[in-house]
Image (cartoon, rainbow, N blue to C red; front, side, top):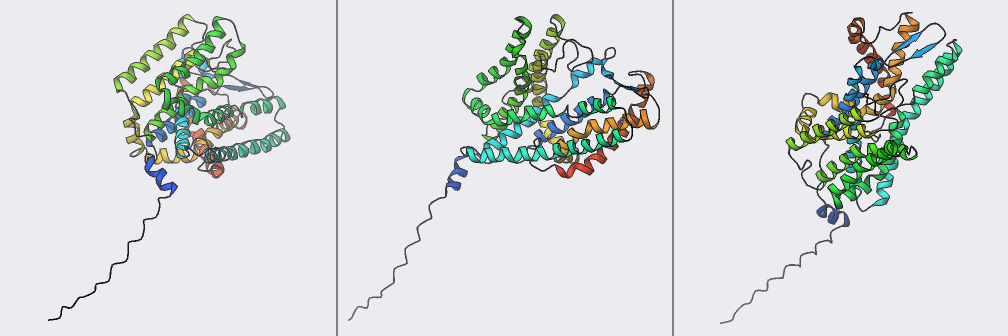
Length: 397
């Protein structure tokens, strides 16, 4: 009997798995990038709206046909209390978080970080150039129709005032990777140093009479809420709890900081208003003082304490508003004073009427009309010039 052997061909060897790419290794090594942060968008939106409304409340001007006198409606009586609602810390908190998200996406790639920073700067510069260009044409037109030189140049000095925010923002965003590394390494020790520095500068200014270092607080004071935004976004990007402590502790921190700010004003040389007032010997904003720093700490604590509610709001009833402001925040910020000047000019020059006495019955009764008219002008300006703002503009996350 002959045995038959069947030859079964061997299966070809499986192809070797390709070596993982550097991008794949990086993707596995790093935490997954979170989606767009609704909390940061909500904080930015609320901050922008509050800043605009506060500035619109300040309108006080008289015109006698040749001289334009400009005051501040918040300088009357106890209206300084409104200045404690100023929300500049929220804008820096959102800016810090946005910068940290960008920095995390370019970790280990310094070249990419600087390119991302350059893109953000170009995105922010375009609406600024448009604003200055339009105002240059407006100045020529006003002088040509006979508006007194003094009034025109007074307006020209006021229009660029919001740009100080962008100057501070540029420096802080450039420092964002440094702040991020410091937070990851030293945590609350780093946060303590960031808060202590502007307080120390203020102590030198008012305790030792050294005015020289005071200007540093234009940067150091706003580094406090900016650094808080960096810490928040870094922890969220790294997979940590973005708000590591309970709401009760955050509220306690806010109350403590506000109490400290009020105590400094009560016993120190600081004015009660948290913004500069005409004729005041000291301004709490130029440069920022210790009460402003403590107020910023309080605002950050309160914002983080209500973070879940703000995030939900930004994804539900406030979604359309937040999304619109996220796309046009820079344009709104840059043009809101121009809108106010246009309405004031229409009342004083166009209608030949005077503005109501601040905080009088007529003043209160006219506020809905005042805000409505100024909002309509601003909406028109945003529609006209909003295209100049790209998605890489400085306030976008």
